Image 1 (spheres, rainbow, N blue to C red):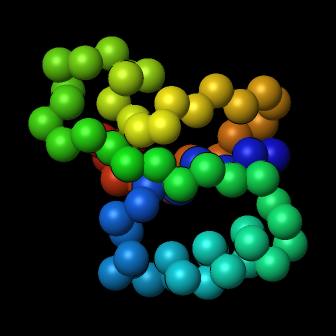
Image 2: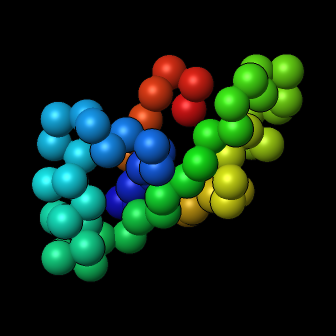
Length: 65
């Protein structure tokens, strides 16, 4: 399973523990930035970098993600 984690959620409860766990156990993950005010763009173009993992994906981020 590949995790996609939004980068600006540092103040969210458990964010640090999540990132430490993903790194400690070498779990595939990508930290992405969601472009603000990008609702007019196609969903795939709202995140940097563009992620296209194969298989199961777990997403952790805001509603805009």
